[in-house]
Image (tube, rainbow, N blue to C red):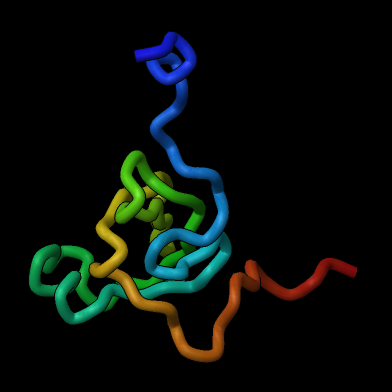
Length: 90
């Protein structure tokens, strides 16, 4: 194994992940996610990037201070909402 491979980061670039969830995408817990993580059922949040693995996304849920890593099948995009943090400042 080359030293460059040993020192390389295992994190994926911040582009769209396998599930097509790019940063700033509004998501909610899917049915599978609600079954596997009942404490997060019904919550919505924003994707902030990818996790350590290709199938993982980092989500910060509304009202939470820190991000949560979840399998991309546990979340689904919220229809009609893109990453709009709020009204523009005048």
